[in-house]
Structure formats: C-alpha cells, structure tokens
Length: 362
Image 1 (cartoon, one colour):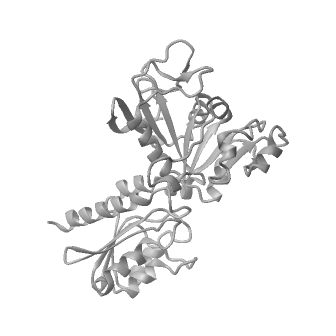
Image 2 (cartoon, helix red, strand yellow):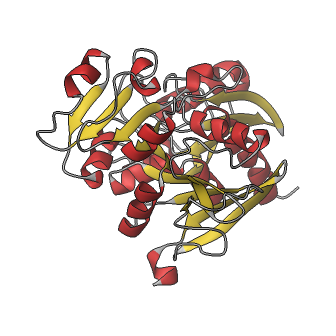
Image 3 (cartoon, one colour):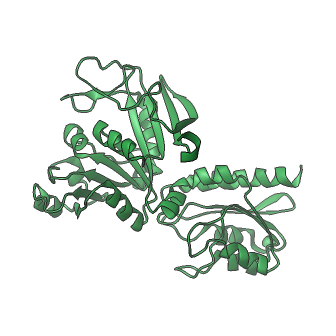
C-alpha cells in the first residue's frame, strides 16, 4: 500500500471516530485521532463529551510508549494555545511522535497554523490536507461558526407525496414512517440546538427532544422564534425547560406570556432578527442549528441565503385538501443546492442537499 493510500485509510478511520461524538462536544469540535506504528493502530481518541479532554492526549495515553516514533492522524490541526487544557501540539511533541497527518487546518484565530508550526519547528514531519473534503463535512458546523460567525443551519423538512408539510388545523400529521422518525432523532442528537417558529410550536406542541434509547441525554437546546412571546407556559417546551434548556427569541418590548415563561425556566432573549439570533448562538459556542419548522420559517431562511444543508424526507402520505405546501420538494429545490446523499428509510426517502459555493451557481 502506498503512503498516500495508507494515509487515507487511517484518516478515514479517524474521521469515522470523530463522528461518534458529533453534537456532544460543544463548543469544541468533535475531533478524531489515531496513533499508528508499523501499520498498527496503537492509540485512539475522540474529543470527550462536553469538549474535554481533546482527542490527541487520549490517543497518546492509550498508545503509551508505542507513541514514540509513531504517526498521528488527526482530523483537525492540533491546538496550540493554553486554555483549560495544555496545547495538544506540545503533547504530541512530548510523546515523541515522529509524523503528524492532519486533514484540516483550524480556522480558530488562536490556532490557525500555529499548531502546525509548533510541530514543524520541533522537526516533526507534517502532512496536511489528507481527506480534507470528508473531514470538512464531518466538522462543517464548527468550521461554519469559525468562518461565518454563525452556526451551520440545517433545514429538516418532512414532505408528503403531494408536497405538503401538514394540514392546517390538524396539529402534527404523520408524514413519514418509524425509520425516518428515528433518523430525525439521530440528527437532533448531532445538533447543538433546534429551532422552530411559534406557528409550529402552537400548532404541534412539540417537545423536540431526543427519544432514542441511550441518547436521551443528547437532546439539543430548543429555540422558538416568537416575536410576541405567545408560547404558553403550559406547552411541552416550557414544562420541560428545567430538563432541557429552552430559549425564546422575542421582539424588543414584547410582553405576552413572558413572565410565566420565565417562571417556568425558559430563557427570554430580545433580538432584532434571525441574523442577530444566529450571531448570539455562535458566541455561545453553538455550531449546528437544526431547523424543524415550519413553512414560514423555512421559506424565510432560504430567502435569506443562510441555510447550509437540507435534509428532505419524502413520505408516501397524501395530505390532500387543506395541506400546507412545502417551500421546497425534490423536484422544486431551492437554487444553489446540490444533492450529496440519498437513502431509503423504510418506505420513505431521505435526500441531503448541500449549498454550493456562490461562485458555482450565480
């Protein structure tokens, strides 16, 4: 096996390892690290739940003395700054690792090439860019937050066979089957926060938690766009705010149910608009924002050009008269998006679309 093929094989394993903790390491990215010696993996590490410890020191600890003279495969440039933990670049040097293969340079201004420089200055061989595209996709939320100052926005829509999101006045309508709904819960678990508009919150009274065995603790923060503070304190969201945080974004001076919501433990934030909300979420370390509804919020975010990825679930249900039309379907996709993945989930279909760089479609 050539050096390039071997590097790609081990980096692919490091990326797969990083995906096991996506959405549960904020504000840090989920990074995977392998220590390899003589073609054998002697140490593995992934950013711990909550963000610490980082992947590299865990992999080095597992490798022990075998780390000396070995190669480290890391999905993101090792950190170079002193935070709550020592720099990972220094840990690599102290372990005696001879070569470091990195998929993606870290855009965090506290790192941004400094980790690579520290390694090179210590006469460690550094290779950068191996499976960069795959690693960037795995860390797309973190990279979006660092480069755009907002979370990655993932729009999830469940669309009926006749292009509807639901039926007016009917509350929640089952569009997809159990396999697709289970996949949605996994997507929630991989997200730092989940957002709905007040229309959806009032019509469906959703809980927006993760209800999969073993992942109950991975529920993301819930956010409601609610200009007039209309969310009832009796709603499932408000009643569960003590267990899983809820933030309601209201207009300046809004009264509504504000006092009762605050008493229930809901955080109320006054904001001028969705862009200000996204910036505020990024400052809190939220990298991935999943948007679950409804049609008005989806249309608004698409029109503003701030949707980065679309998960489109298409079911076999026919909604018929009174249906709420989806702003997009597979045959009526928003401009600037390309299909990157397609799966069958029971009788339903999942299609994932990523936004193309502006230069590719303008």
